[in-house]
Image (tube, rainbow, N blue to C red; front, side, top):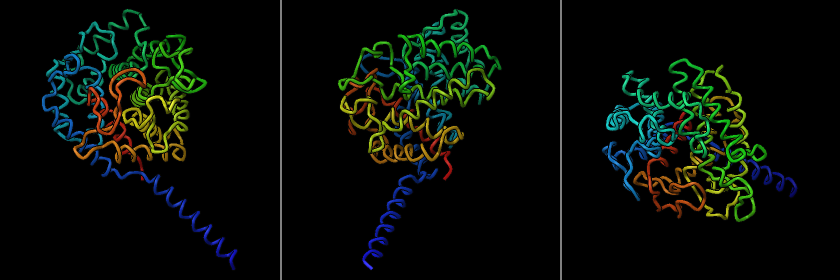
Amino acid sequence: MKNKIKLSSTIFIGSLFCFMQLQAQKTPSKSSVLKVMKSTNNYFMQTWPDPGLAIKTNIVRPSNIWTRAVYYEGLMGLNSVKPHKDYYDYAVDWGQKHKWGLRGGVSTRNGDNQACGQTYIDLYNIDQQPERIKDIKESMDLMMKSGKIDDWTWIDALQMGMPVFAKLGVLYKNDAYFEYMYKMYMHSKTVEGGGLYNAQEGLWWRDKDFVPPYKEPNGKNCYWSRGNGWVIAAFVRVLDIMPENAPHRDEYLKTYQEMLAALVPLQRTDGFWNVSLHDADHFGGKETSGTALFVYGMAWGINKGLISSATYKPVLVKAWDAMVKDAVQKDGSLGYVQGTGKEPKDGQPVTVSSRPDFEDYGLGCFLLAGTEVAKMKK
C-alpha cells in the first residue's frame, strides 16, 4: 500500500512538473504581446513628439542616425501586425524632416548612417514617392561602383547595411545588390581581423580588437551579446526580404542556424542573456537589447518553419516573459538596456532603473521581437 501511495505521489509530482513546464512554455497571446508593444511605443512617441528633433547626449546628433533607425525598424514591425495611422504618420514625419537624407550625405559608406534607408524603402513601398529612396539608392549605388568591400569592420554594421541592399535588390529586381552585399558580408566574416566569425563556437567577435589573443577575464573568448544580436537580426531581415532563389541565401541560413544553436545553452536561468555571452561575471546581469534580438531571431525562425519549435520555443518564451515582467516598466520605458558601446564594460551600469544614453534602439529591438512573437501560433 505504501509503495502504491509513493508511486502515485511520484506520478502526481511528475505530472505537476510537466504541467508547470508546459505553462512556462505557453505562447503569449497576440493581444498580450500587442498590449505591451503599444505601451512601450506610446512611451517613446510621447517622449519624442517631434521625430525631427536632434538627439543630445555628449554631443548633438541628427535623429536619423542608427539608434533611431533601429527604433523605426521596430515601429514598422509593430505597424505590420497592428496597423495604425499614427505609427505610419510618425515614420513619414521622421523621413520628411530629414528630407529622406542620410547623415554624412549620399557619399557616406558608414552602415550606421545608411540604416535609416531600411524604413525609407519600406515607406516608399507603401507610397511610391521617388524622394523617399533617392538618396539611399544613390548611396548604395556609389558603394557598388567603388568596388570597395571592406567597410563593415564591426559586426553591428551587418544589421545596419545588409537589409538595405536586400530591399533594393527586391525593389529593382537586380541581383547585383545581393552579390555586393554578399562580398561585403564575407569580408567581415572571413577576412576582417582574420575573420570575425568563429565557426567552432557559432558566434562573432565584435571587431578585430576582440579576436584572440584578446580574452575575457575568465579566459574565454569575448562575444558581446548585442553585437551578436545585430548579426541575428541581419540574417532575419535579409532572409525575410530575399526571394527563395536569391543568391547566397543558403550561407545566411546556415550561419543563422549555427548561431541560434550556440545561444541556447548560454541563456541565463532568469531568461535573459548576459552582456558577455561567455563570461557571466564580466559585468554580468540581465540585458534587454541583446535578449530581444535573440527572441526576434528565434521567433521568426519558428514562424518560418526553419528551426525546431520544440528546441527554441521554450527558450524564447522564457526570454520574452522575462523582459515583459522585469524590463518593461509601468510608464512603458525599458530597464536593463545597455548603453551604446562595443563590449561588456561599455554603457554600464545596466540596471532596472538605469537609462541608456539613447532610449530608441533598445525599444526598436524589443518591438522587433514582439512583432514575431505576436505572429506565433498558440
